[in-house]
Length: 343
Image 1 (tube, rainbow, N blue to C red):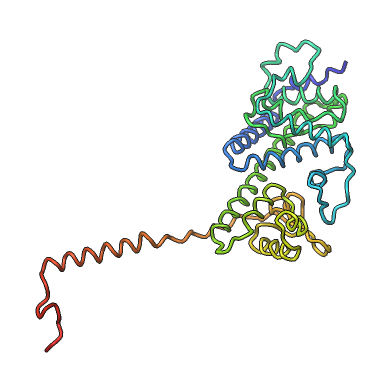
Image 2 (cartoon, helix red, strand yellow; image 1 turned 90 degrees about the horizontal axis):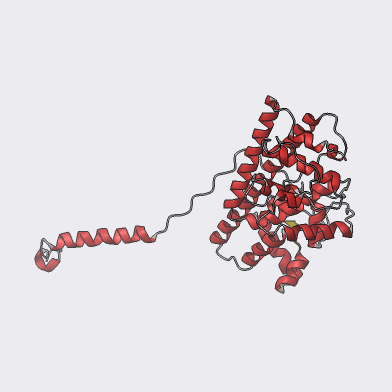
């Protein structure tokens, strides 16, 4: 039996490795805290599940990307993309994994990974991230390529996260074999884990920014009309077409196209079809994730200040006039019956 996975947890703690451990733990902790307090965590969780499973597919020599899995599940082809081959077995495993992740509490790690050997005495004293990588390597060696990713549940079982973080899936190709340089493999995996956590946090920030922008648009539009249900549909599906909108809300295709064009002008969706005959729109953050538009650089623009309500100002003006009338009343009526005109 190949027991090289135990060497992952027993690697020497050199200063560079300690820095990588610190960076990964910090990135995971920040993502966990942000997700736990976010008002968009359900939407992020759904997209992160697709992103994590696509990472697992690519690690097993599949050409499928997150956009391919997204397009397959939504039943809408993405423009300018070659259709990827998704096996029915992969889709079944994804549905099984997605259902399993709905359970918030994670089982003990011994129920997730079957370890048939006695662990060394220093196992419990090893950093939790090293034990995470060791168990993930062991699972990769023991399970077939069609097995669902295990790392998000291991993060919970080892106390590294409270929330389920489906996008934190990394699989080092060296785990399937006997790595010559265990320390190099560990550092490489830690850096990948850090980058995955940072990307997940950026995605969450973009989702929240899009939801906030949509709320401000609805608040400021004098004739929101069908924009409100359209925003709800984009939030649920992420991709819309005029034909789909027409079927969903009983509109004509022309009317649905005008509604989507209006939403695009307001920054609620992004058209990604280009010169294609049938237009396709994505939510702004997905257009960035799938490479249709570039992410904005630099500091985000400041939000326009909300106009102050006029009711307190008008009430204060009325109170001042009432105070002036009360002051003048103390001096009695004006001469000549209150009139200052000459007879």
